[in-house]
Length: 164
Image (tube, rainbow, N blue to C red; front, side, top):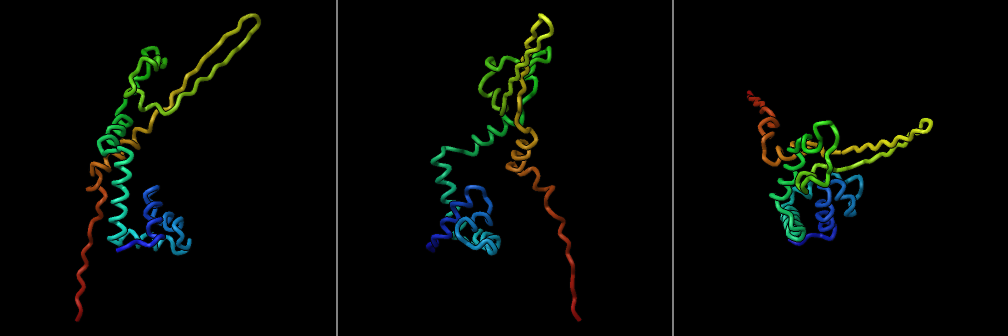
């Protein structure tokens, strides 16, 4: 089945942030109906096929693989603070660390403070490292591996209804 222009746009926008309502609205559906149409579009087999086709094409173009993503999440989730701290509680010289060891570092802030008391001038340099969210990375890995699925399944309640 041929997709409409709006459906093609829906698929494109959906792949940007995986939000069906926002994708429907951006594709030109009315704001009021966007939630329902977005949800409905995701149930249509020909739209699902187009989402999968575009997703695979994006993956091919970007040269991303599941293994690459998992390995990056692994680096962000399994680092040790000891990698960055010397025994005197100072931050190690980051230039001595490997690229893989530096993956969890998402920010560096260097502050220089000069204090003068009388004839004495003292310079203090403080370096703060911002590291990745270990918990978030581990949760993403766990979701991918399906280790939370058994915890999330709702208990099914069976009700037997008899009519007389």
